[in-house]
Length: 151
Image (cartoon, rainbow, N blue to C red; front, side, top):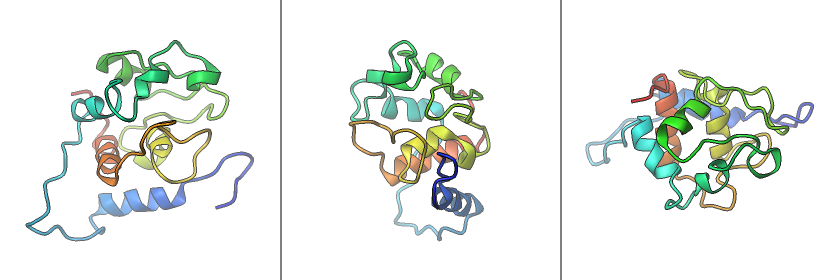
């Protein structure tokens, strides 16, 4: 979809998430491994600590700054990261006004859009790190769809 006043809508990502949530993305076979738990406790150690390939804390563990982290500081612990994301609005100049994590609405959550392959404002994340796998993106989408609870 072409940019609309500087914003690009991740239509393909929204459709894919809706299909997954509606259960039309295919049937599981008994040979498939069970999906990773869709909880913030399961997501946090895979995405945030400096020891992961995505290294989110390298930039987002710093104080808010529009240049280095889009004014999104998520601290260095799970509770601070959760509090910075869920129900909050982006304030960085590239994505100002967008919901970071909208519980029950993965298609409206900037956090998932920034991590996924679709169009987004600003830069895709993790900047300079390895892209998330489809399983990791699915896990994040399922966590948001389930209400983005802090477990």
